[in-house]
Amino acid sequence: MFEWISNPEAWIALTTLTALEIVLGIDNIIFISILVGRLPELRRNLARNLGLGLAMVTRLMLLASIVWVMELIEPLFTVFGSEVSGRDLILIGGGLFLLFKATHEIHNSLEGTDDTGGGSGVAAASFGMVLVQIAILDIVFSLDSVITAVGLVSELSLMAIAIILAVGVMLFAAKSIGEFVDRHPTIKMLALSFLILVGVTLIIEGCDVHVPKGYIYFAMTFSLLIELLNMRYRKNTKPAIGGVAN
Picture: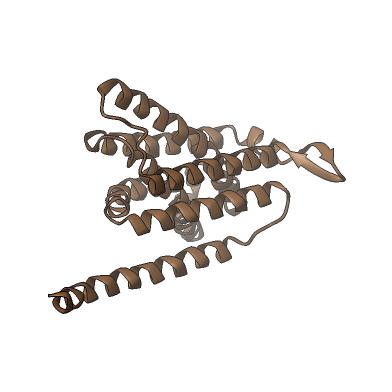
């Protein structure tokens, strides 16, 4: 099972796969950070950790049932001459859910509405709902992640270690990312826009049109860098504006 330990190429593959899993998990971190931001502050960390824990469990379960996962690629039926597989249906459904959720969050942010309310009963219901929504998207993100892992390496134990390491890194970074998003409304709006982009990409991928992930991540990184420059500019010009006003 662990014969690959003495193989240097296997360690290179493990490093590459772990890095790829972390990159693929960025969408998951953004989604979880925005969802838990609607919970009371004392419960956010617990929900964030549970959400990422669910992501790891989901990926490991899919990995354990790898034969079933690969069967999802097989066509189920044909629509207008195009073959539709179980993976396609999951990606399309996940993309639509992501579009709905991101649009709903943008609407709530712009209108200033709050779904969590102030009572403990409402907060408890929101906590459960947040975990349900995280679990739904974990399945979608994990499916693509596991299929990617299978395409890169053949050792099941190596794939499992890469997934555990990647989730460990995400657990370490998720709180900082979540707090940063909460502190900066423009970053939150940008993150929600990223989720809309990811949702559209999932739907397109579900329609058997390949979208190179490099383009998506380049667009996200470029937009984030521009917004960080804008934040720095606003911070530097605020005192000057205040001085003119006085």
